Image (tube, rainbow, N blue to C red; front, top):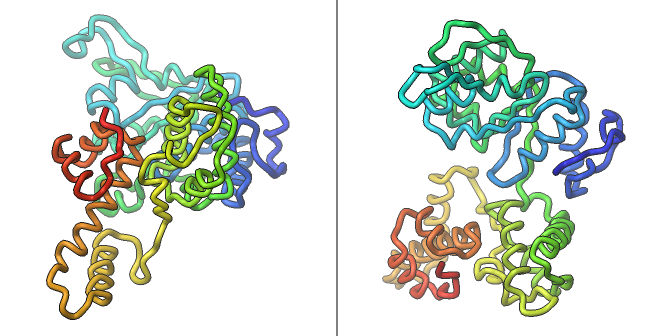
Length: 356
């Protein structure tokens, strides 16, 4: 459990926060903002890709705040349907809906005098966003099926792995709620933007999973570390954590060697960036095709396979890496069945992915 020391609460202190791993410039900036905002009661919006550690920062803000002795309650807004999420957040009374056999307090009540962390806030419906806005502004709500108003003293920290302003433009997220949440935004950098932290994270996870699995895997082959640092980590810290756990479990001795790593990682797929118009998929696809056409021989009659096959291979390799080499999970994420995935693994020379 994350337990920053009281020394960490000094808003003027620099350097890492106890319990959080990494001393890169990008993370030092995150730590500085975390300390400053912890002393206030302001709403915080954590932004960043999946697996960048948004919950850890939310916990650090809570523990370093005057509310640190109170409850910290996490709700994954993307894991429940609208009706279930409304009941989970605000509670319900007996008979409010089928299955409501007794009164039940919600997470906002459970977080009274503490902090509630609303993860994947971008997945909430417009109907529920109206109720969330009221809690943020008025600190009050009613349980589902009840008319009695309940007041709470709860700090709200929200997180999103999507650009909420973009969701506002698409009219799938309320503008007024966005500005109410976005009092203090903290953007967590992806792992590929702080590669200097990777060896520290690997050491931390090695220690953790050695202890959990009663193993003694304490050495890391130089080639393996080089491949780990070079890899672009689409799943960020969570993906790295899963890879280290797998290596600890599967290592025949006390060393992690290159052959223990998933094929996508040891294949040396460093992050690459195409020049030009930005990072949206349409632009990147256009540039990829342009580059393929520009570099192809004039008499090349296999351009379709040349371009599309490479994109397919890269997509499959990266998804396997993000899923820790588990083919069932990768197939589900890709939207294809496992037999199709196995066939494509053979076609692209990626047949070493784990079959479970």
